[in-house]
Length: 472
Image 1 (cartoon, rainbow, N blue to C red):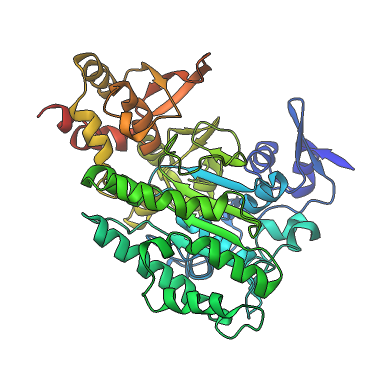
Image 2: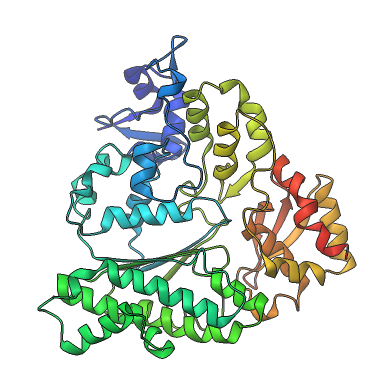
């Protein structure tokens, strides 16, 4: 049986608007939108929201008892146990409902990609400890046994390239070698597995000891997935976080051919026709198109800021921000925080910059540009420096708070970025400097959109990070 938001509001003793917000944010498992109204299972549990009841907090806590905010924490177990954690575990449900073999999520820097990928690792990975305890009080656990059945059932390969930022291919390859050593070492159960052939164990030791060549390492994901599949009799999940960081470095530091040549084989072995793969996840800022990295990978599901799917799982929603402000007893700062850090639109979902929100609250609600200098985009700089007078004029229009018409091509090739400076809008959007709306799909697969700067924080840093590159 299903009930309306109004009926559930009466049962739970909260406002109908609040119940609707819970539905929109995916906090009520099984809730469905029928026409313009939400329908909720009559046995649904009221989500925890830390809101005020009758002028008092549900739980009276002193400031010292409140958990700190997770600034720079990308370890899921630590984040959800020691810090204030915004529950994003329904990402797992949405994925399991979709069941794409390989998923690529592109979002701006500091929007929670690494933390979410580590959450997926902890949820799915076979472990000697009972890791279900890290999810027992989370939204995913209330979704039912069909979702809980996947917890702790897969071997997992996890790599993050977020710190692979070097000036040469030799240094980049050295770091990738180190990351693979660490990941192979994390699977020490393979050393003495009686299910592996000697040549497989020899390869394992070679990678572990840092003796594998560039050619040998280019097939490391393929071979490690095969060994794990044989050992566990279960194909692994492969997670690659910030996959495009070393590629962007290669583009700007002139070792692009070397990094693309390596990554083409590295990713193709892992994700293309790999029978020893249960699921694959990748995150990044840009989608690298037509570079043959994912050539022939017809089952790749790409999710960008323009898509509706997964639109509430990277960054904070309005209701999540309200809950946070109430928890820290600074609800009077809601308008100021919205003015500074709201304004992003992922699909049709309004999103706040999570990095800036938690820094704002942690700093005693001091409004400033916390997102500035959290990353550098040399590709963006290259394109900006070749901008035409027309592009510069439109960028200045953005700077005074007005909208511009922007053509967004989601299939940009790296090598052609500076050949068509209109690509600046795509880069600004992916990097988090633009908000788009009123988008219309064109016959050539591009989008024609209205665009503007999303919030006061971006206005503050826009000139220093964007316009300086056209004033040279």
